[in-house]
Length: 252
Image (cartoon, rainbow, N blue to C red; front, side, top):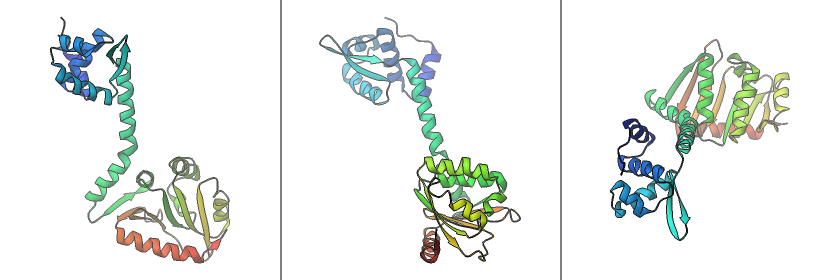
């Protein structure tokens, strides 16, 4: 009865997330093929009372599945390639949440709810954190040209706006009237956005972005700074001011 496996097999399964008993059961099932609890108990020398909860955990993790062999319930170990697929899926889940996790960490490290970014890379990083914060909408107060100080228009359209659309995040935008603004708002429907116009004389050198319980301030390239302030009170104040101006702003 073979139960001595190369150390690298056990090490790999432990790294995947199985404990020693689970790894032992999985390896035994790979050798046996579709097998009963009784056969697994004999091969692993584990009592059936111990095996049942192990098999249940392995099914939950996607490592095992149940089947029938005549009238007997059998357990089948998923092929090793499936473990690689599951690991890849997990990596994707972690990757999708990493920006939001970083935002939580950086907010905590940045003092009283304040995070600073600089330059083009800082601008891109700030937007990634906004888009992956879990919000379904945000409010934007802008001149329409300030964001282009940091990146070219194709990046805004093809990266920021496209990702926002995929995530189903709607933008409510107050924008200073002008030729650029009219070009932008003409695409509101296709870019999941609703805009209203401010007077062309409005001075808006900085952009303000309100999302969740945070407010982001994007200065001109000359000052080259972006600030995210995490404060529910400040966010509510800016949201209220935005909505008051929104009601008076020119509809498209």
